[in-house]
Image (cartoon, rainbow, N blue to C red; front, side):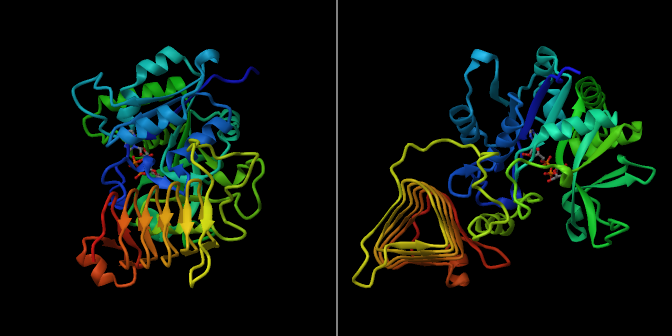
Length: 413
Ligand code: ADQ
């Protein structure tokens, strides 16, 4: 059989309220991650590595930096007809922004009609993981389903953040029931502490998806949501399939990182996922060349470590250090340093995530903190060591004690 024509749609319009203040000025998919990346780079790397080269990215909320990142980093030569195109809310159908993710697809039906794909792969833009979508497409076609949902087990306490799937006991490739963010979930028969969660990634027959979002647009009771409305629509038709993420075998994965998938929806989850990258045998391996994680080349100079001596170290241990970083007589451990970070003599940075162009001045200390872009930490200022003081300065402090300093702040004491 000839390979199906596939159009990939990346849903990138989410607000990411629970990631505030990191999402105060940018869409969640544009939040920097792991030094060099933006969250959307993981979804787009997966799509491109799966050899799907016709890609639209649906944007909406505070999309400026996201649009810029997608057009600068992901623009492809159009010579072969391939593209990654950011599509802002169109207002083609009525004068409103996208109501929900299903409405976002409905509003760009003209692109699907022009493209005439056999299959549409719809993926979220908020997760950190590797996945070969072509394996899911093959399983979708083999199963005969019209719409297939990727699934992974998650702790039952988190069921209210996910679409929860009940598999048909008579046919393990089919979904019997799909409940979006249930508050009274039932655990799995073989593991009562877990539920089977939708990953927010779908493979659909193009004509069936077009029919579904069109019917949904006319339904006044719908929230126009892929998880809340479209998945249940296919379950009702008896044509919703399930794809177990653990079947996915990405080239170059290690036994330790092949089932890694994180919804970095909260500050604590975001922090942990960044810190995960540092460990010697990371649970998510950035260094898999067979499935490269792609992002923009910064054009910056190499990282440099100088000014050791006189009680200064000028070094970083157990850390990720990006291009353009200068560690000048400062000490860094357990941290992620993004491009252009500058650390000055006798400064100490421990267990922290520093985004682009953060400056930490002499004798300043940063501990268990996320410092957003362009923040200046003046001399002798301390962050993350006294949470009451951090809150009094207007910083967010999470339950687990992570301090977040918003973009562009010039910290005072
Ligand atoms: P949520 O992540 O809560 O749950 P949603 O807020 O719709 O659902 O976000 C899904 C994706 O769509 C994200 O990538 C987001 O950026 C994007 N998005 C949201 N609204 C959009 C819009 N109007 N236009 C364009 N893009 C939009 C979803 C599913 C659950 C599933 C979890 C997995 O609904 O069933 O379990 O993802 O994390």
